[in-house]
Length: 325
Image (tube, rainbow, N blue to C red):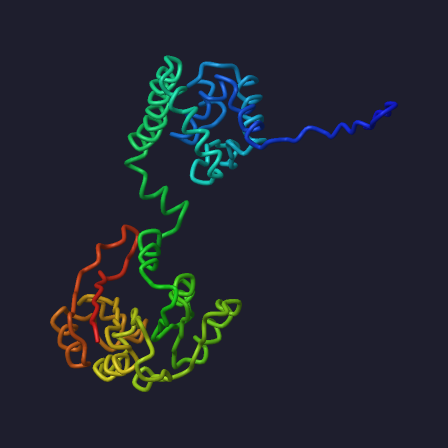
């Protein structure tokens, strides 16, 4: 806006907005300071904040909006609830310094100290709800977990030990169930099987996975280059091998120095019918046999362990073994 006077002209510019002033406006309220003190310590719902600060929901929600608009708090959905927190590590340097000054004074106020005590009570109630569930569900937890999450919840996390840069092979991959699990963690996975029918089933299962390659070949003559694999898996394969040593030697050839072969298979058992129903050539494998075969195949640092039986499994017990090139 411009005013004309006889001897001069005066220009009135709009006032400059200083960012720190906006930050101070958001913090210029004792309730908002209390909210930030609590949310710096713990992510909480609106209901939990109401319990800690002993304020009505409308008041808490109104102040949270002010803080959120100025990026002092963030939130995320958790089912039907929304959890709020103060993203201290993500604040701009000026905002961090300002909060340090405010926290030093606001944190020593009697109301903040009472809030901290009530926060401990709210968190204790959270823990009590979880503990109460497990107290009542302990007898049926295994069944619940199986129904909700499947039978492999204990095994799948172990695949997280695979590095995302590794090349891994599933030798005797069959229909590709293990291959599919490995592909979620390893950089590349090669599945090898001699059966065209099995490979067709595996392709149907794995067709959309870009990091999986299926190859037809005999385990005694793997279609894999020397010294390329970080890890190779032989799972439920040994009973089908007339002589496991050449297969283990082939896997060793394909492993990098320091690479590992992991085996899971049947312990010795009395299920003679498996020779007919499953085409097995032997009734399980003893620890001594595994140790001998791995050593003969060129592997060292052999480890063997019997696996605990699955509650619903009807077959023989399994073992796992590993050897290092």
